[in-house]
Length: 105
Image (cartoon, rainbow, N blue to C red):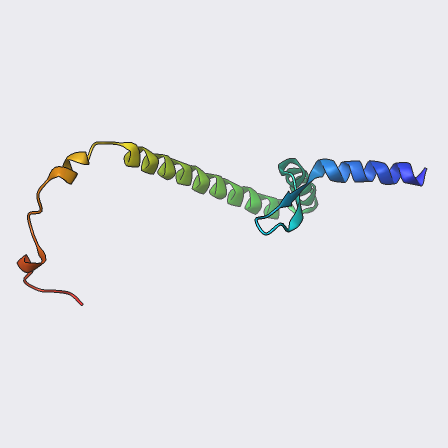
């Protein structure tokens, strides 16, 4: 009977966790996204309302920050693939270092 409970607990552990190996060959157990969400919800249920509200505000901030990062990354990638400014590569140099009146150190 005890081994069955132990077996069920281990199966649950396997479902909630993944074994990953980093570049050095070191193995580490990490929780899956779903397990982290479940653990977070369980923790939130234990907190007072004002703390839950703070965490919700922070989560919204993180999401907004992440969305902006993805947008910037996409725009940057589009710009790097674009040929809009290729004409500048063919343009002659108009000024040289000799044209400087003052050099900053």
